[in-house]
Image 1 (spheres, rainbow, N blue to C red):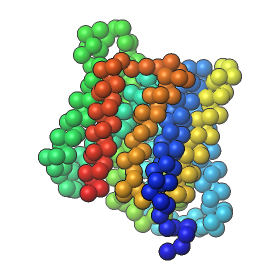
Image 2 (tube, helix red, strand yellow):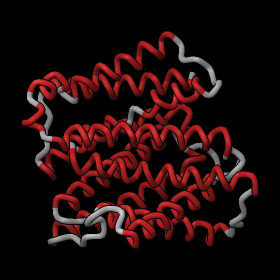
Image 3 (cartoon, rainbow, N blue to C red):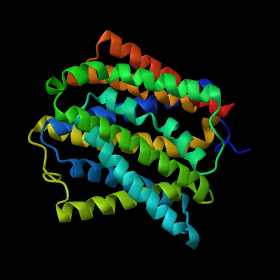
Image 4 (cartoon, one colour):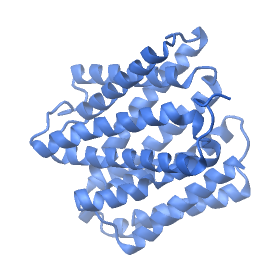
Length: 304
């Protein structure tokens, strides 16, 4: 086995995955900073996907790979690109309306939705143990979202709270659908090519959306230096984390180490507190710990 494909020492692989997860968390916090200072939603996604396209095209040029996709996979690849576009819009819409950590906890319910989608489409039925873990995660979410208080005092939280929850769950659903298609219809396509075509689709659809004005104010420029800082950081952090993960994925033993990535909501909680002043109550923190712990256990269960 060549040194370029041999697994990294596990401690180094875990440290790299934690770093990548923290960069993804910082990307979301930067996005909220940009949105709070006048940046348009479409502009943020357009900038992020544009940087990712440049990174992936550079990888293709360095590795001298062919931009070739089997003919029968084109419709599925296009569908994945459209789903990731919707996921990006939904996730950033949730981040703009909710504390960042809550938006990410909602989005990170995608393993539950993926398990249910797989079962509905003829895959294995979730075991009783997995169902118990999923139920625990959902209970943790109810605590994080403070649903009883929201039902009693909905006017204090505003309509954006409910809309943000809907966007967060939609983000998880479309991402789960994209993962199912990738696993069952695009497994023969290389990860670098698949990623490039996906971000290109997102970029093109964002350009079309901007031209048609589908999101009012979607292309608004940042109103001040903080907005510009958030916009630049979200693009650089996402591009760096995305490319690092893609380049290193074959050496990270993801089957064993992927659950480490669930530190992202924890990192977003810390960064959200120091950068945005967002904080959760003690009971919500307990609920968040239940959600993250449940997702990690569910991931480990699937690995076994």
